[in-house]
Length: 84
Image 1: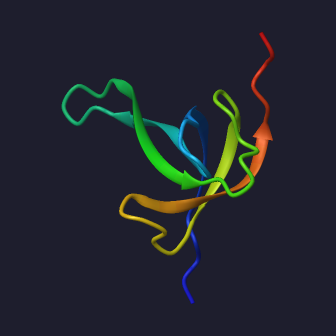
Image 2: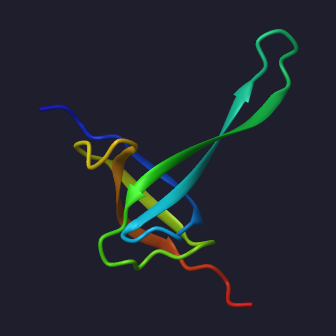
């Protein structure tokens, strides 16, 4: 059995029911110029109990397809967003 991928990112949207959009940042070097760049990927993840809110840092894990775009599940909330 294969190992499931795990990522950590920030919740950027929680407007859907039981679903959040998580932005994962990574650093990539430019092929020609060598400058480090930040690249962001957005993943739609299943959030069963709606515990993750906008601004929270969450861990997500790969899962079976749950819908057309949803292939990740929120495993835990790493850090809550600071209250404003």
